[in-house]
Image 1 (cartoon, rainbow, N blue to C red):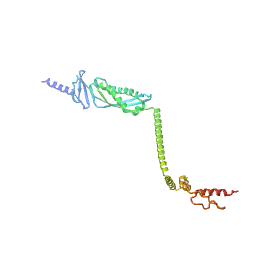
Image 2 (image 1 turned 45 degrees about the vertical axis):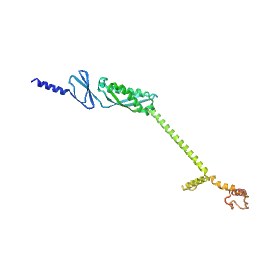
Image 3 (image 1 turned 90 degrees about the vertical axis):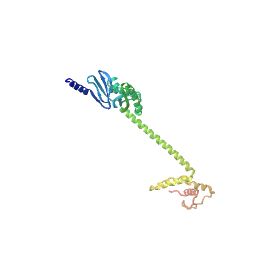
Image 4 (image 1 turned 90 degrees about the horizontal axis):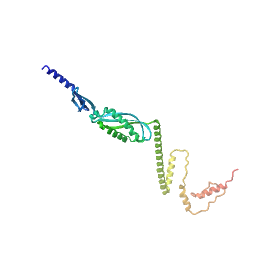
Amino acid sequence: MELVLPLLAIAVFYSFVSLRVLRQYERGVAFFLGRFWGTKGPGLIFLPAGFAAQKRVSLRIMALDIPPQDVITRDNVSVKVNAVLYMRVTDPAKAIIEIEDYLYATSQLAQTTLRSVLGEVELDELLSDREKINAVLKKIIDERTDPWGIEVSAVEVKDVDLPDQMKRAMARQAEAERERRAKVIAAQGELQASQTLAQAARTLAQEPSAIQLRYLQTVTEIAAENNSTTIFPIPIELFKPFLQAQAARPAAPPAAVEEGEGPGGALPAGDLSSLMSTLRLSAARTPPQE
């Protein structure tokens, strides 16, 4: 009876020491006498102290920062690229047994894969089509880490550091592209304006009185600016009705001009030809000044 109580106390203490508690997101890879015993957890587990040991593995998604890598693209441009990798352990036993340090190994694999993949693409593709590059990186790294019990959920290229000369060249290229677009837009505007003006000219040619209305409207707009002196040309279209009426009338002898009657004498109203004849006669009879 005296030996039972100490043995019972030792057994209770040994059992208490052998208990382990694993969180919900943790698993324990147990080894009994050096041999794989199984994956334990979560919750309360029993590991015989002195005979068994375990390695804790987190099943949560982890983010690995890939340090900046010097990469030479396919078009011989040297850039620095960094990325981030999201991964999780799907098989804790493989992550512990198959590889010594799965985090370090995955990080090194991601760095080498990043350099090799980006070395096969051009700079424009790297800057404009990152989704495709991210998908290629994810596929390659996921296939390589699958035997380790690791699943890669995403790989994202974060930053691309370009040389200063390349930045200036790209800025000049972007400026030239904007100037080209501006010139194209201006040329298209001129083309549309010329087409509209040609259509308006054809419409005005069909209605001769329309040009007179347009001319009077322009005169009204100029007069509204309160200018002291306004000089504007008179289109010949305004005189066409008078010229046509004069051509339709029978020819008449030129009006006689009495001696001493100056250019300011009475003239027939609306007779443009008589006006011109009178001006020529007056100019011929004006004596030269000494």
